[in-house]
Amino acid sequence: MNAHAPVASAAISEADERAILDAIDKWIEKKVAPVAMTLEHDDVWPAELVADMTELGLFGALIAPEYGGLGLSATTYARIVTRISEEWMSLTGIFNSHLMMATVVQRFGTERQKDYWLPKFASGELRGGLGLTEPDAGTDLQAIRTTARREGDAYVVNGTKTWISNAIQGHVVALLVKTDPEAQPRYKGMSILITPKIDPKTRQPLPGVSNGRKLEKLGYKGIDSGEFIFEDYRCDADLCLVGGQEGQGFFMATGGLEIGRINIAARSVGIARRALKESVRYAQVRKTMGKPICEHQAIQLKLGDMAARTRAAELLVEDAARAFDTGARIDMEAGMAKYFASETAVEVATEAMRIHGGYGYSKEYVIERLYRDAPLMCIGEGTNEMQRIIISKQLVARNPA
Ligand SMILES: Cc1cc2nc3c(=O)[nH]c(=O)nc-3n(C[C@H](O)[C@H](O)[C@H](O)COP(=O)(O)OP(=O)(O)OC[C@H]3O[C@@H](n4cnc5c(N)ncnc54)[C@H](O)[C@@H]3O)c2cc1C
Image (cartoon, rainbow, N blue to C red):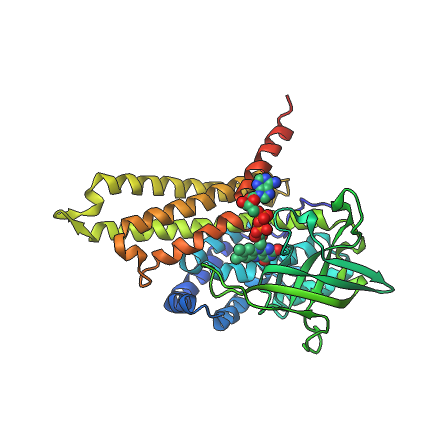
């Protein structure tokens, strides 16, 4: 099992990358920008935009072309995520959580599993996410209680997951379970199962799995966060147990998080860039004491800080994405990018609100949305407390005294 092989191997040319980014930019301008504010405030799942994203191939962005995906590099992917997040960050969660699930199958699945699942994931016929978190286990993933018991050719799953992105509108989840709840150390008893909610052929709901309620949030609106409740849910062992071998789930889950962390970092850059852009514009048109506020030194200091931090975050994301594309172990680079970029998003969004004065607090301006969306970047895909610990452990491991 090579946990650090690149997700997709095909490198695209610069011209192809430009064409893809141009298509994304046009779509954002024409389709996303006019509706983002309303859909976000009404917390509406963006069905039409999801259809567009399917057509643009985003649900297969990191899936190899042989399975019907675009096979993009992490570098191109991160640029796409940043651009979309400048307009509406929530949209990127709809395909990123899905691609984390696909990444687990692409990296670790058996040939049969890849042939069966990846074309359905790449086309968007089956959309989904990654199911790790439980009511009593977030950071401490080894404390999960969801179990999968082998019975003949099937696994029988019981337990509850929470905070799962795409839980309600999605069709399938890559589920972290305990196949041996007594194992010590605990990670040795963990596996990942691909568990659909619907029969992929008939698209009828499968028994034994339900979603409970949709969770209400401060930001990250539009995308559904929800529970997964498994009660004697059965799935075919050969198709569902990723890699066909029990006990590998913890490493698969943390391997999938590397691309997830680059994605969160890229989203954070999108939030910071937009907050900066709005602030630079507003500071030139808003006047106090007879001059634009950008001529007051207090505002200049803010803009200077915001610009430098945003650029540094961009470079850290590029650095982590490039390292990922080489196939190297990159938990330190991904951790640095995620940690720095997400803290930057919070700082820059907060400063943008101050620069906008009362208008920054108004729902008519995008700033209040950026301010609500930014803090999630510090929590998702491993909290920033954990990122600093990971960075430190890697520093020591790479530099033995
Ligand atoms: C909007 C949203 C979407 C999400 N989407 C998904 C999803 O799609 N799939 C999924 O599986 N999960 C998802 N999550 C869950 C998310 O990954 C967890 O919330 C996150 O991992 C933190 O876990 P927790 O909330 O249980 O906090 P806890 O683990 O209880 O942590 C609480 C605090 O203690 C700190 N802490 C914990 N352990 C340590 C330690 N050892 N050292 C230092 N500090 C520590 C944490 O950093 C944090 O500050 C989502 C969450 C949100 C809010």
